[in-house]
Image (cartoon, rainbow, N blue to C red; front, top):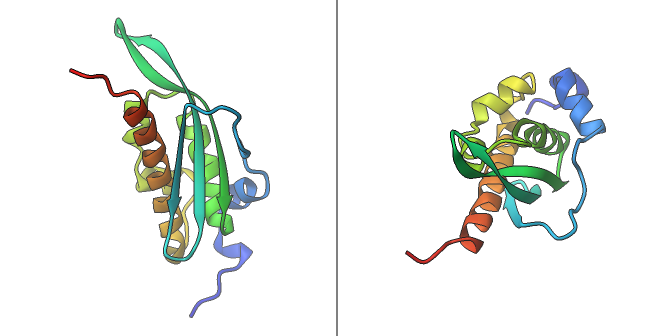
Amino acid sequence: MTAITKESYSKQVVEHSKHPRNRGIMQNPDAVGIGGSPCGDETEFYLKIDTKKVNGKNVDYIKDIKFETMGCAAAVATASLVTEMIKGKTLKEALKLTRDEVVKKIGGLPLVKLHCCDLTINALRKTIQDWEDKNKTSS
């Protein structure tokens, strides 16, 4: 088995893991979601949602986002980066985020750490689903 060392990670992974952005528990979030992986890592996202006009229509967007991760450097780094990538985006835009986009933006991940990115994206999707479930209207 190949050992994962600091040199295995890009500068972006090291920076985001040492100095995570938007880390912390949010008071009174509009939505919360947790994702886990087989390795035991876990990420929880907290969202504040607001509306803005896009092409003349009111759409929900991510006004603020926080996260907590119990996991390795790659799990912390991908969660941190994702918060920066989607803050201010509409929920529809956030749901389109892919593993490839995150991995490219963070400068790559070792193959054995790609599941950390999947964990982050799945946790984000669960959080958005929480918002949608709370805000369903009867037709």
